[in-house]
Image (cartoon, rainbow, N blue to C red; front, side):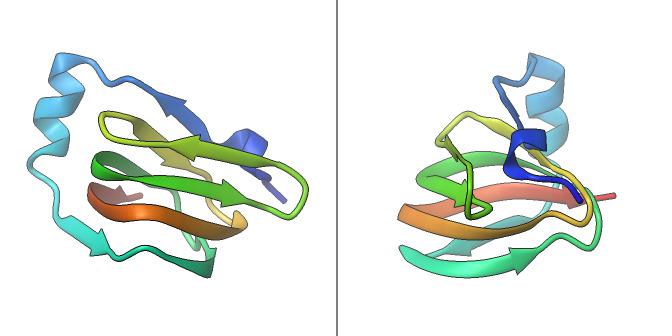
Length: 90
């Protein structure tokens, strides 16, 4: 079972950013909610600040970060600032 230690957070290349901008956009207000990834998700944060925790460890990310969540990750999203992100599953 993956943990938040398996979440990849990094700055994207120019080409990756260009690709991400072709993906759908998802928005979320400041909130806290549980989430289970049934498939891998890659996203690029446009706005917001998020901490994702699995109960033992946590990872934080914000605008400009490319984030890859592994399939089967069970976590809690803590959205400190409203989020706007490009996202892609698979």
